[in-house]
Image 1 (cartoon, rainbow, N blue to C red):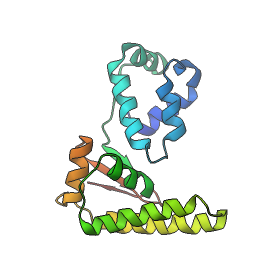
Image 2: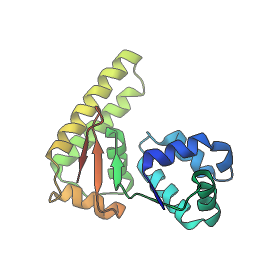
Image 3: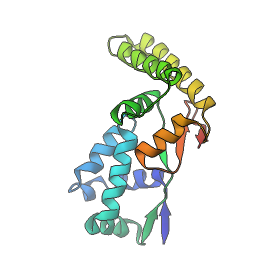
Image 4: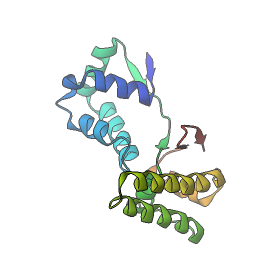
Length: 168
């Protein structure tokens, strides 16, 4: 039995994309994995793999082994994924956390009408805000507990711009 990590699963799906053409959620996830909806789409993809014998069997065919998918928790890798998650799940946050999240949202909105160099500077600012918030998180913080509760996960992985991870 093999344990597949998220990045291995993504590579497998990309390398065998035609084989998975009957499962539109594969292309949907691969296309949007870095979008604000990416973490939720990954969890839906894993749920589909685990509940569909046909989908599971196609992956077994590719790797010639039974497998499990490692539960790496909820991975949040961009400021916009975090703000979208908070809003889409109506997660309760404090006034201070609201300031960070609304700032990230305003920066995202500003990016839509900006030129490339301005967009890059705005993205830097969004990451600075996101990383400042994440630096303060720990497992006892209500913000973290509320995200875990709303998404039904036991751990969250916050990924910084430099790809360092904070696991809570």
